[in-house]
Image (cartoon, rainbow, N blue to C red):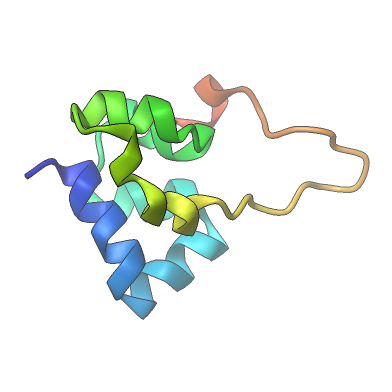
Length: 89
């Protein structure tokens, strides 16, 4: 099973993972051991892109609603930082 799919399942079942994801999605994904590509998918929150990455039918992704919590933006900030800045080198 994919580590990304494990993470999505954990978001549906683990209060610890849910809280960590709400607090800091990037750090939670890193701590869970997701690859850089998987981290980017979590940050983009694109269900179709995630389903394609996992090679699963999009219709099976009703549960992905759990990842749709964006981190708070700073005052005056209109979007998240560039993805390249969010992923550690």
